[in-house]
Amino acid sequence: MTGTTSRRRLLAVTAAAGVGALAGCTARFDGSDGDGSPTSRPTTAVDPSSLAANGNPASICSAPVVEGIRGIVEPAFASDWSAVDPDNEFVYGEPTLGEERAVIGVVADGAARAYPIDAFWRHEVVNDEFGGPLLVTYCPLCRSGMVASRVVDGEALTFDASGQLWVPPEIHSRSAERGGDVFVAGSRGVPDENESVRNTANLVLYDTATESYWSQLLATAICGPHTGTRLTIRPSTLSTWGQWRAAQPETDVLLPAPHSELSE
Image 1 (cartoon, rainbow, N blue to C red):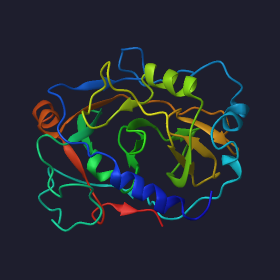
Image 2 (image 1 turned 45 degrees about the vertical axis):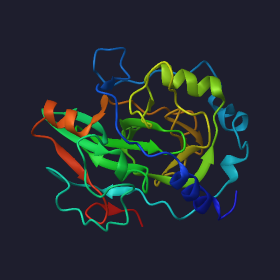
Image 3 (image 1 turned 60 degrees about the vertical axis):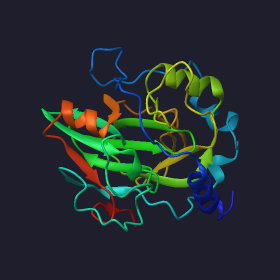
């Protein structure tokens, strides 16, 4: 891939359908077989060293990080988006957070936070400290969300978007979806029998400590020193802002940049 990756991706994202209104329900994704405790489950019995070679492009491990997409490294929160400038260039769609807009909700230590999908179209990655080091991601091209712990081998890693795109073998991405590691956050907001994660050009994360590449769909490192390591999935809920706030009236909500600080 070349330095045009980010530009191609931005065009594809802009052309994609917006989140829009959600169905009148919420969906919870535990990654824990229903007991609410965060854990990590294997995607399939596969040699992790072969994941990158079997995906597309197979040369992803030799592809450099492409500048352009900057993740959030110092998130800011408020009770709503009343402080957000109507001309904010970092927000996809309406600069106001309407009741019907999609949010990813997380509860930790008796507190609640909401991460609006609209704030991810430009950044895709949020590094937070909430119930421990937290990673919240959204891939506009795949319409997939993934929430996990940022702790790997006892160290809290900082993640960012590599600017590269990679398609994992479909059997692995479907297994990750069925297992609850990733969830659909598309135009209708909640997964149903007619909607699924798109097994297409997927967000490739990298950690700044080792520059290992991580597949968002698989929540697994596919290149570098951490190859084969899986992230621990954290419980999350996909909802509308109105429904989430009704269920969690004391919730905070992520503010987009420039309120939240972006990576260099």
